[in-house]
Amino acid sequence: MTGSLKGKTLFITGASRGIGKAIGLRAAKDGANIIVVAKTQVQHPKLPGTIYTAAEEMEKVGGQALAVAGDIRFEDQVEKAVQQGIQKFGGIDILVNNASAIHLTDTPSTPLKRFDLMFAVNVRGTFLCSQHCYPYLKKSKNPHILNLAPPLTMKKEWFSQHLAYTMSKFGMSECVLGMHEEFKEDGIAVNALWPKTTIATSAVTHVLGSELSKHSRKPQIVADAAYWILTQESKSCTGNFFIDENVLREQGITDFIPYSVDPKESLQLDLFVL
Image (cartoon, rainbow, N blue to C red):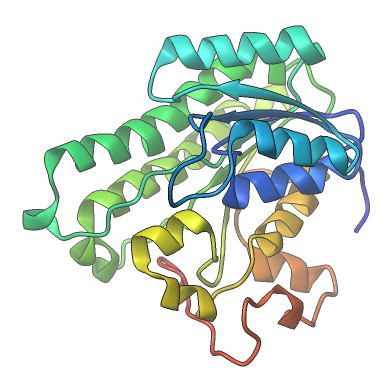
């Protein structure tokens, strides 16, 4: 892959573990600066990793990292995280809206507090972080916003199975649709990235069960695809709904076995993959 993120500053939400952390580690290998934004300051009993351990790992591979405790549902905490990042690194070149809440239930089985959580994190949080990073992104030479969100579709099966979650994730996708056009004059790329298969993150395993992880890929595949997107020229690579495997295939990668948690097991397609 061409391009480099050396010296670039990334603001990554939900970066204490999983896909967000993997994207941060991949960028850190180039010598990037990572603003690690997440709520986890103390180790969760069932989910490994904190903002501090993630930041430490990123620095070990060659980057600089700033651990910022923040809940993206709240504007004052987002604003504080952005300002801490600016004070430390002097700017923001890339925003990765990775933080997400998931609750896969039908309409009668969805508690309103879960509905509110998904919309607060997935839609409002994405919008809020984009809004507060925007003044600094437009000063960057090659600014990017990347949302971990699915391709937009009107296929009824995705709505009928888990309506609240689907609407919240498509809200992130709609931010891509709108912001890429809105920010085009500023040269800010806005894209979406979604995995073709389920990804074995500790959070997903906790929600959907450990058996699924055997049929999943490692977060590294999403990180490698994100790396390619974020190293592209922002004015020409925007408004896309990328799928991780497709991105890597177009770069000539044909062997995906190393990304599998268990190469002997069949892979489970992720939600929203057509």
